Image 1 (spheres, rainbow, N blue to C red):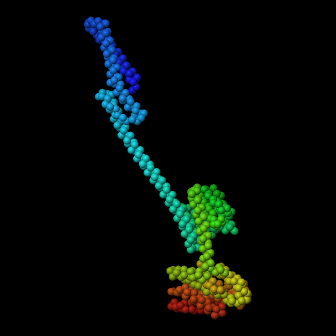
Image 2 (spheres, rainbow, N blue to C red; image 1 turned 90 degrees about the vertical axis):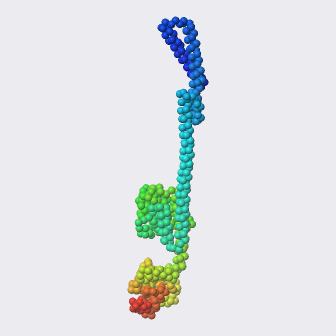
Image 3 (cartoon, helix red, strand yellow; image 1 turned 120 degrees about the horizontal axis):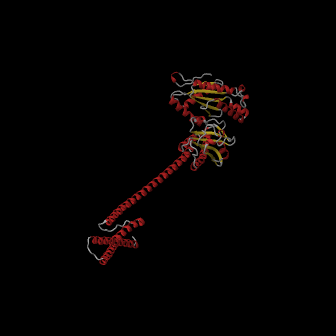
Length: 494
């Protein structure tokens, strides 16, 4: 409490005490007069004045020094807490009401001190918890980001590994497409190869369709948007909402909902393929994911070219340059596979040994270019009239072997007769000068017997071929097993 206020309070209390003294003195004088006691007025006035002055002064001093100073301490303590959050305790203010107030304030300040301590401790705990949660969240985000980067690296590594394997192109592309679909959680993933000359895209691998095998080799033209536009321009396209596209502009097997990212597969500046990925959600491809797909597309360009080169080298090592048919190496590989399958599942395997009749005479009469043309035409004729699972190999100048999986000797003999008949009725370069006026072939047939090797099977077919030659050529001879499964050659004219 300020000093001026304290003095005003003391003066007011002294004045009130003096007034009370005057009132009491007046009341006492009237009481004495009423009782018949003669009190002289001047003497009473002096006595009253003295008593009044004494009472006022004593009251003023008591209030100022005994009461107001203690109240001032209380007020200052409360004011210091309000302005400065000060928790300094009051001294003992006595045993009266003011002292009780002082003790109550001290108790309040003690409780406030404990509360402040608890608040500080809780604040520290909250800050620690918040820091831990922040660190945990940051750690989780970094961990998720690291895991994503590792998945991306693993995906790129798988593409490199697949492209470096000694497998056919379609097998490599199928594995890469499936790996992309699973790793990136795609609804559909497609890989097209581009033919710039015909302006067409051919689907070579697909993921996410009910029957993807039925879609392979499907053709998309360059003028079909947006797949064709990417193939034509070599620029990536992201469609955030497939529903907004006209139905005619989207390749029919793709479900027209969600979003789609289409990226060119480029090698040495030329667009060799198109990678298309879809998700069921709209705007599902972020810039980061689009960048990842672009990096994958670049790697795909290298993978496709590497596999194509490997196919070319493998084809060169397993195929005949003149006719495009298989050579001895491919025949050996396919024969081993078929013999293993036949032994495991009990299936039949047969071979045809085919030789062009009087081929040396054709070369001598018309020259090797004419002979080569005749061999190429014969190779095409056999390819068109045999199954895709059959293997045709040129093993010598005019000698061929046909491997017939899942075919017994009876059916194989009929296949040989069919080929012989077609050749006899087909015009070949230089064929008009051959004996009989047409180019003909002789055929030997053999089917796999128990415990027989591939070399044994080929030898029996070759023996049957020589028997056909002995019988006058342009015929089919089948090697038949004797009773008791003994291997021997039974020659018969077909």
